[in-house]
Length: 149
Image (cartoon, rainbow, N blue to C red):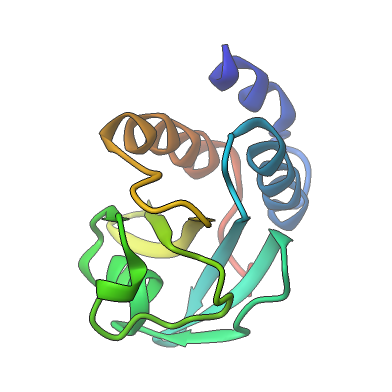
């Protein structure tokens, strides 16, 4: 199962940035129809680009801005079937058409978000959200989030 494979990659004794790098690579290579996978780390009301796979991305996203900033501010999973219809969407890659973003929450505070893009419209659904929520839970429990950014 994909979750068992993923969990075996995450090493509690390794730096969080290393685990996030492996997580991004794993998801990028295991999921289908994906154009970008990465993490944004929250510090001082700003999301900063973390480990990712895909084309170069936006370095900073303000809290509440775009899909990632909305996810971080609301602490809610964002499934966007068509990013061009999302108010305030930040287009780091013009080929991206659908997006899913999940918060990583420690002690009721968002510390990072997992962001995944696809060139296909309507790529993400509730099943993806459930799978990726398990990924985020593993990262929440097995990584040290203090002083990451």
